[in-house]
Image (tube, helix red, strand yellow):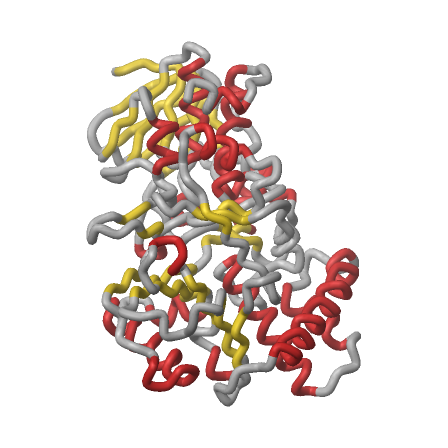
Amino acid sequence: MEQLDTIVIGAGVAGLTAARLLADAGRTVAVLEARDRIGGRVWTDRSDGRTTDLGASWIHGVDGCPVAAAAAAFGMPTAEFTVGSYQPDGRPIAYFFPDGTRLTDDAARAFADDVRAVDATLTEVIAASGASDSYREVTERALDAQGWDDERVARVREFLEHRTEEQYGAWIEDLAAHGLDDDAVEGDEVVFPAGYDRLPAALAEGLDVRLGHVVTRVRWSADGVTVTTDRDELEAATAVLTVPVGVLKHGPLAIEPPLPEPVAGALDRLEMNRFEKVVLRFPTRFWGDDVYAIRQQGPEGRRWHSFYDLTPLHGEPTLLTFAAGPTAREIAGWDDARVAASVVEQLRRLYGTRAEQPTAVHVTAWHADPYARGSYAYMTVGSATSDHDDLATPIGGVLHLAGEATWTDDPATVPAAMLSGHRAAERILDREVPIAGLWARA
């Protein structure tokens, strides 16, 4: 049986970060990956000659961000694309009333002011909330405090519902009150016109990465870890387990003995979301050159309510929208043509016959991926922000969990995955390791 210092399970950013730092420290490390590619939920499709990030897309705030530093060192071109919830300076959001007419600039600013007012109240309400409170409950308290008429409340309420879906792919009643505490970012948001997958490719350079190795069982004890795959069995003094929450909870990976507390409790209170991307390419930019994003108010926006103009990134008229939460469940099993038809129907409510048929469509299905079972984790009602870090509690001194769900400050992001892999490597080495070591050789 092959003997190693450390086995890393999963070749996403968390696993590759841990493996890179451990290998650079002189440890023998193997990375086992079930898929036929590296990157995990960082996945760039180039099959049609285009560059389409089907998984992670953004760095949400470059200031002090290790992923931004790594991307710069690896020569990855970036483009500023700050999403913004309201009205970014110089990049207008086209808001549409429920009847399909566009809000004037003054009306859009007034609506943005309403959202800001509720957010200011919401900060105080969430601070006073309990573990059993949902995000719906705290937002309703914040709305009640405004003293507005029903129509004004309805518009901000649906915005908060949509924000919950877009941020965490969960329905507002299923998300914990503190589920969006990490929503604030510092610095510009950027995307990668040449593809986010250049990051894991650079991290994996020179590592022993074994693709197509499906791990079926992890056995741990004080003596070390035995990992069984569909091909072989390996032993190591330590292991780093970076599979997503959905796989940890719903298999088919078996962990023996079962995960102890506080890891088990934290895992029970976190859940994998439903969040899919829909990328549509068009013959022309029929929505106009001056529109950065499109938002539909009212019941017509129940399914497709927000669109983002990606045209400047690739030089081809492109819109991105999301199927999140209930909508992701609704369209599960639809083919790309049916999804596209549904999206275009909504766009025609806003733009009439100017809304064309797309020339290309990409629709993700992360919920159906057996090695992901969703896009990223969220806090269910009853969870606490500390559950993220508790999920990474070292087990028996030999087993370490890492990944976006195990990082409290900025979960559900690639920086969280990188930082969690860095933490796992430091715990195994029992010393501080500069994270800049990941890109110092670049």
